[in-house]
Length: 504
Image (cartoon, rainbow, N blue to C red; front, side):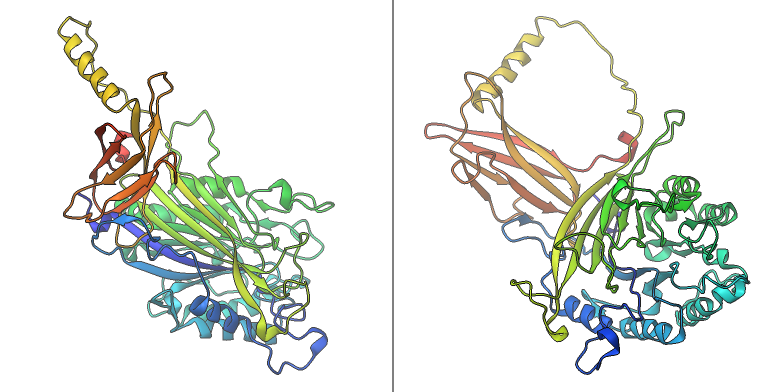
């Protein structure tokens, strides 16, 4: 039976590329009258209060479920850079107003504090034309130190953290593993400077990568493995062909192969970034055949711009932000990640522009991913023997079962449930064996322990030829399938649980 401490669950509101300034979407164009113009934070908070989300806080209707202890679901805000357009004080002030508006707000049932807000800078958040490094970084370091000192429990404030002469020190680990979370804030803009190779690309130097590797190694292994681990960075670490731009050369993060190796080795689940204003999601699970370590896939989420007027792409491209739900079971080495991308609607169905108070957000895409660690299959300890006449009895029993179910067999997929009151989700269906004697049932009834599951899921062949059902439950359970024909009835069973990592 699972302990509730084996599950960790988190909801992340991912914002990126806010671009407060002249090209900010919520600023009146041409410096017009701002009366009646909503602020970005007002629009987003209204959406999270009133919008229609596919959040998994409640299980979808029609699914049989059994109650269990509630897994605490924390909500955090992750902002991956480009707060500003030109790195001037009025733009930073708008960014401060957004952060202050988030503090104390109830979002998806959780009260947000500065402890729940994580930031990294983008290439627009520094004076990139200045020759002296402290002149480039002084404004952002003041902004970041103001934010950090508002935390109730400031963490990892090493000497020089806010010193503009050392922007690489903004790359650090925030260890909240006692609350089930570890965040890597990674400054990929530390070397951005006009007229240099780093003007357009990101870079994380090897010293900073070594520092986060050392910081992660100091966290107790069990505590680190149990926690959900996310990394925040501004530039894209992997150059997808769809994100490549002509005449810009290699503009992704320099040393990204070292950075990604460290994150994967310490079991990070998510890497969030921005920069290109294009929302993409992909799994990074590259592995070299010369290595033998188990691979924990890393889900990379590139956020679109939540605030810029400059949106690449054709018709339908718009401002976006992400709401990400993640559930992690360390013992099974499985993480389920549900990404909901919200898009800003600024035009009506006739493609006519709406007044800004009528703008609203809607769901553009849902992406549901299961990340499971790979590894070498454990060697079997079984032995072989020759068949004997005694085995014929059991062969006959197996044949009787096949005939009794008319060559229909229950199948199952099991993975973490995003319902906070459950541990597992099982998707079950009936698979028919290709054979002349195969005869599909007319009805299948799915059920489990009557103490927990007080309803029976009934599937008919007319409505679903695969007789599919879903169960949400807390501990391993035995699921029964009753198959009905006009002249016959049969039963079959499946034991539903996630495999433990020591059996992979």
